[in-house]
Amino acid sequence: AQKVTQAQTEISVVEKEDVTLDCVYETRDTTYYLFWYKQPPSGELVFLIRRNSFDEQNEISGRYSWNFQKSTSSFNFTITASQVVDSAVYFCALSEWGEGFQKLVFGTGTRLLVSP
Amino acid sequence: DAGVIQSPRHEVTEMGQEVTLRCKPISGHDYLFWYRQTMMRGLELLIYFNNNVPIDDSGMPEDRFSAKMPNASFSTLKIQPSEPRDSAVYFCASSFSIRGGGGNTIYFGEGSWLTVV
Image 1 (cartoon, rainbow over the protein chains, first blue to last red):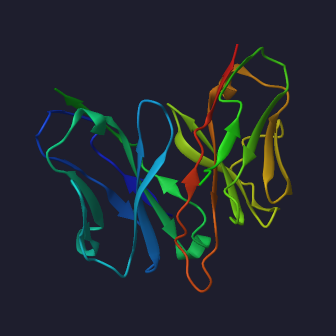
Image 2: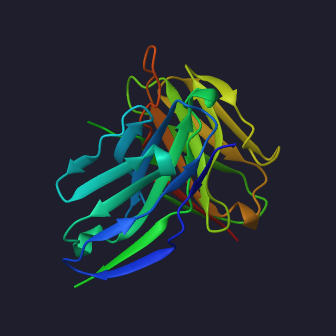
C-alpha cells in the first residue's frame, strides 16, 4: 500500500526565513511519481512539481527547491527567503505504476504561516 | 488557457436534498477525477474516468453518491439524499495520458464547497 507522511502539521516562520517541508513516502513499486501541490487560503490546489522515481536530481525553481532521496524515501520541499504569499497548505502526493499512475495519494498537508 | 472549471463554487443545502456538482475538464484531457477534502480524511479520490468511462469508483462512499461523464467535456457528481456528513470541498481534476509513460500531472479545479445543514 502506498502512503505519504507529512509529519509537520504546521510551521510558522518570519518573512525571509528559509523553510523546509518534509515528505516521506512508502511504496512497493520501483516506478512511481511524486508531486507537491499548494493550497492557498482561497482553496484551490495548485500543481508545483512532479518527479519520477528514476530522476533523483534536485530541482530548483526560483525560491523553490526540491530534494528527492530514494535512500530515505523522502521528497522534501524548501522555500528560500519565504514571503507572506507563500502562506498556504502544502501537500505531497504519490502515484504508482501499479495503480496506472492514476491514483494520487496525498499526505495530510503542512500548513505554512509566513508572517511579516 | 482555461483550467478545470467547477460549479457551483459554494452550495448550502438542507439535509435530504439532492446536490449536483458539475465539472468541465481541461480540453484534450482524457482522465477526469473527483476528489473530496475533509478535515478528518484529508484529500481522497472518489472516482475517476478515462475517455468518459468510469474506471475506479472504489472511493465512492455509498450509494447516495453517483458520478457520470456523458461526454469528454462534462461530468457530474450527484449526492442524493445529502447528509450533513457530506459537507466537504469536492474537487474535480483532469489529466491526459502519456503514451508509454505515466505520472500524469493532475490539474485541479477550484473546488465546490458543499455545506449540508
